[in-house]
Length: 401
Ligand SMILES: Cc1cc2nc3c(=O)[nH]c(=O)nc-3n(C[C@H](O)[C@H](O)[C@H](O)COP(=O)(O)O)c2cc1C
Image (tube, rainbow, N blue to C red; front, side, top):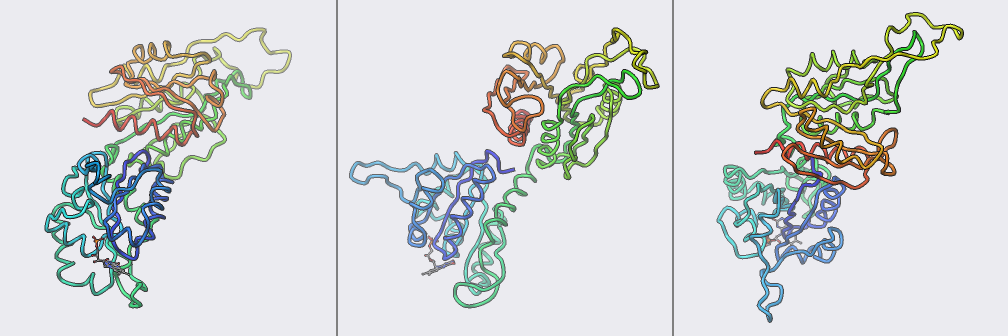
């Protein structure tokens, strides 16, 4: 859930400030973009240089950039940039200043001007934490819909033992992850994903298939589930283990079975994603027995299979969102956009084997996403898990009013 999230990390003057370096790292490892703002006291606990090096961005702790030249730092812009303002650690002093609406340091001015949600991870000695003033301040912040990541209990820097240590960086990142998941536009949405190839029988043992591995569809099912959706995965034959977080998995063999299962589920889903490489045609009258060598026909007559994506587009009711895939062997942009219209999809994801590392069987993919309203999103070559996240993010953005 932290992929592509813009997190403004506020650091205040607590001994736990050293953990903020690990926190910034962990948030970045999970795909977030992190900028740091510090109180002047915090810079005595950990240097801005450390945070600037880790995040790759300058750290903000002062209202002015160059007093002599009259250059000032725009606290309003930072608050507007962020998806969330996470203050970790948050001292008793900063909590109290936030309640009072003080703006006498740069971090507090950002707090007052930010439009994004604010989350605090308090860190202090147990008596400071238990003090009625601190507890009342936390209550006041809660009533302003500021989320509190509760401190842990254990040995404190003061030598005392009790509740007050800042939650561990990994736990804070988990809490942030759940926070975004709870607010995800995909929370509670029902998503149908088709994946893998289909096998169209020639006889009892032979079939016509294709080289789809199912990796892209499985990665998408996992990414939608992670974003809070309830996912049903309909999969053709693959070597893969279905993602553990997917609620329902149905295994099918043929295009007809894929179609029947998908159409039966379609009415009840909010989003349908047709990733499967469904065969366009199947042998007419396949033999129920294995054909002997001398019985094999010179030619196999084919008939068209039902088109799952076209049926989604044709039966779509208002509020349903349909995503198709176009696999091309050439540049493919024109045919992908044409497919978007013809199949009445809301979004088409183009991948082409002309791009090295993209398409069937690989662990990577390079996609371009075309939206119904004409928007186009070009992505670099990435792992299929990252590509799935990009697709889920694009769907989420498209669903948001
Ligand atoms: C070594 C040391 C450790 C401190 N650790 C904490 C702490 O964990 N939590 C806290 O609320 N205050 C702590 N303080 C006190 C704050 O630094 C002090 O209240 C300061 O005014 C906080 O300013 P700020 O919130 O603007 O960063 C500590 C002070 C010192 C000297």
